[in-house]
Amino acid sequence: MAAYAVEEHESTVRRACRIVQLNRTAFYYKPSRSPDLELKNQLRDLAARHPRWGVKKMTAMIRSQGIQANHKRIRRIYRELGLNIRVKPKKRLPSRVPVPLFVPDKPNVSWSVDFMSDALTSGKRFRTFNVIDDFNREVLWIGTDTSIPSQRVIRILDQIASTRGYPQQIRSDNGPEFLSHRIRDWARDQNVFWLFIQPGKPAQNAYIERLNRTFREDILDAYLFSSVAEAQDMAFDWMEMYNTQRPHEALANLSPHNYALASGFKP
Image 1 (cartoon, rainbow, N blue to C red):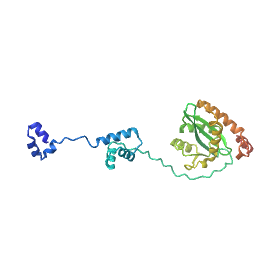
Image 2 (image 1 turned 90 degrees about the vertical axis):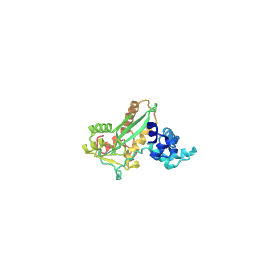
Image 3 (image 1 turned 135 degrees about the horizontal axis):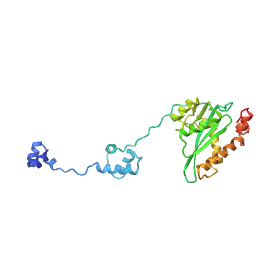
Image 4 (image 1 turned 120 degrees about the vertical axis):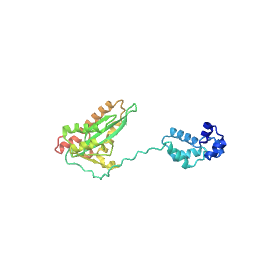
């Protein structure tokens, strides 16, 4: 107001300050560089170089550079700049009741499914989706691709069921593909009970974990693959050998197919 009176009405500074009750020292005061500007620049620079650093780490770094700033002041500026790290909330899983493993007395009572991963010689990652029948440990499918989303899982399960029918239950871990609404709706529509093991308890899915170990030793760790198609071809050849020739100690040293025949079932 005092500056307005001086500029627009050609009043003296003394008179203008007396009218608005302003000390003439305050009228002549020229603000220096913002005291927060240096801190803002420091925080912006740290955030650009270390995007996952929080305010505590930044405060320690700023003080190590000889800038004595109150931690409350740093936190205030940190928030004003919108540098807060957004923490993605951990998805909480429903409680899982441990269900003891059992050996089914016939096929299609229980299947087990799981994913594995490996890399091509180019460094590109790929995954395998493995399915077995718990009754005779028969490998029903080993599919490879760079991505196997829930919709692809459903197509594979439907393809297997087209020749042998749907199982009573499917056991899996708590992977995101298995937790999807599509899988839940599919299992309900096909009257299949989807059994989730407890998080961090792979032994509850021991049948397919044992298969995974053998498949990794025989194929994934034994060969280099230049393409996903090459890995798929070798997986299918190995699956045929595993089901028809390889003795299985848990099956009285019979192959899965021979064990099914000996039990009175057609493989």
